[in-house]
Image 1 (tube, rainbow, N blue to C red):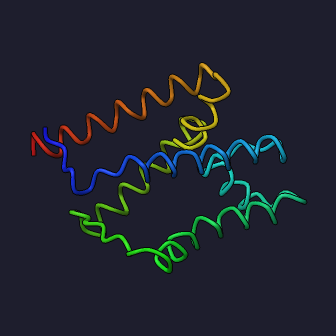
Image 2: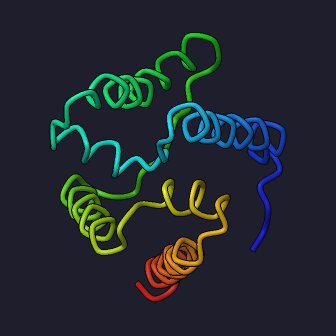
Image 3: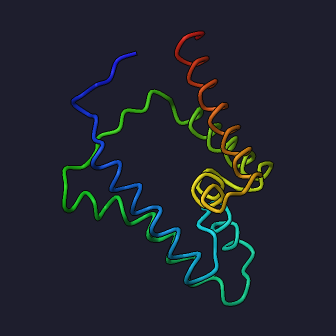
Length: 142
């Protein structure tokens, strides 16, 4: 394995991590809510009174932020080596996994680990192991 030094950006990664962690901390400290994307999105579907506004704002921020980034910096050009069918299947499997795992990577990995949740530590370890195994199988066995 080699490191592509032309795309290695530890400063940007650190800044992004600080922003994500800071936003998650503010949400829990000021609003008493966990910044788990699947829970926030699922809460929109339940239509709980008084919950819709902040959830819509959170999801809108996720949708608008790439456009804001592109307005001030060179847009990223991701390369996805999969067709629409595989992407839809992957999205469906992620959705099923978040239901079985009682949360997503942001809820468990960012928020749960920071609260020293044992359940989140196990879930995050399993997310990571599944990701490593998937990449290994896709890149080296197929």
